[in-house]
Amino acid sequence: MRAVVCTRYGPPEVLQLKEMPKPIPRTNEVCIKIFATAVTASDCIVRAFIVPLRLKPLMGAVLGFTKPRNPILGLVLAGEVESVGRDVTQFEPGSQVYAFTAFRFGAYAEYECLPEKAIVAVKPSNITYEEAAAVPYGGLLALYFLNKANIRSRRRVLVYGASGAIGTSAVQLAKHFGAEVTGVCSTANLELVKSIGADAVIDYTKEDFTRNGARYDLIFNAVGKRKARLQAQGSLTPEGRHITVDDSTPRLRKDDLVFLTGLVEAGRLIPVIDRRYPLEQIVDAHRYVDEGHKKGNVVMAVAT
Ligand SMILES: NC(=O)c1ccc[n+]([C@@H]2O[C@H](COP(=O)([O-])OP(=O)(O)OC[C@H]3O[C@@H](n4cnc5c(N)ncnc54)[C@H](OP(=O)(O)O)[C@@H]3O)[C@@H](O)[C@H]2O)c1
Image 1 (cartoon, rainbow, N blue to C red):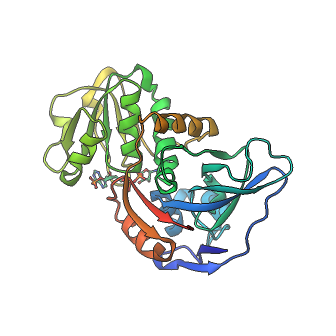
Image 2: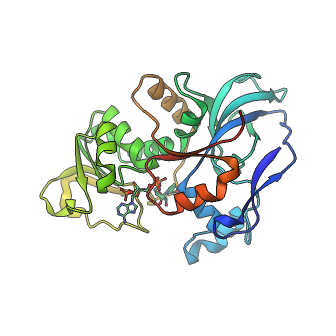
Image 3: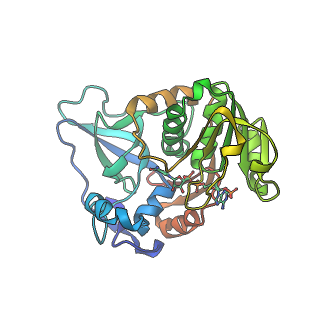
C-alpha cells in the first residue's frame, strides 16, 4: 500500500511517500480502507518532536527517540471497513467509519487496522469522507476540554483561537450546550467565526479582550501556551474558569466520537476545511500546518 513515512524527526521534508506492507487485522480488529485523513497540529509536533526538554525522555520512550516508532504518522481517518477479525461484532465489511488513532498513528496510508474498541465509529451519513476526516481531532479535543470545564453550567464563554481545528469545534460545541460565545481570532477569520455561530467576535490584532471590561464564565485558550499565554484572570466572573488546550493530556473516548456523529447529522457541528491536498503533497501540507494559522482543518485525499 502507499503510505507516508516519517524517516526521522525534523522538518516537513522528512516525510516520504513509500510502498509499505498492507496491515492484516488481528481477531479483534477492523481493517479500514482509508479515503481521507487530516494533517493536524499534533502531527507536526510529533514529526518535529517539539517536546519540552524535561519531557523528552518520557516522550522519546512513548514515541521513539530518533524517529517515530510507527513511521506512518496520522491521527484521523475516514474510510470503509474492508475486512474484520473473527471476534469483531460492531462493524462489518462495507461499514463507513471514521476514527481517531491516538498513539497508534498510521492514518497517512491506504489501510489501517484498529481494534473495534478503539476510537472508531460509524461516519456521519450526511458528509463526505474528507469532511469526516475534519471532525474527530478538533471535535474530540474541544469536547474533552469543554466537558472538563463543566460547559453545561457556563453561560458566557470566550474561545481564544476560534478559527483553528479545536477552536472552530469549541465555538460550535459551546453553542450547542447553550452558551453565549465570543470568538477571538485574527482579522481574516472574523467572518468564518461568525458563520459557525459565534455571538460576538474579537479581532486580537486590534483589541485585547483582557482590557475591555467584559467577564466570562469560561475562557478556553485553544491556541496553547507556546503561542498565547493569556493573563485572563481579570476577565472571569467570580466562578469563572480559564483553561488552556495544553493544560493536561486529554482522554479521548469512543463514546464522544459517537456523540459527535449525532451532532454532525443534526447539523449542529459543521466541519471547517481550509485546504485539501493529495497524499503526494504531504510535505506542502505539513509546511502549511506548521505556520499555525490554518482555518479549521487541512485534509488529505488518500484513495478514491
Ligand atoms: N493537550 C494536548 O495534548 C493537545 C492536543 C492537541 C493539540 N494541542 C494544542 O492545541 C493547539 C491548537 O491546535 P489546533 O489544531 O486547533 O491548531 P490550528 O488549527 O493550527 O489553529 C491554531 C489557531 O491559533 C491561532 N493563533 C496562532 N497564533 C496565534 C497568536 N499568536 N495569537 C492568537 N492566536 C493565534 C490561529 O488563528 P489566526 O490564524 O487567526 O491567528 C488558529 O486559530 C496546538 O498548538 C497544540 O499544541 C494540545
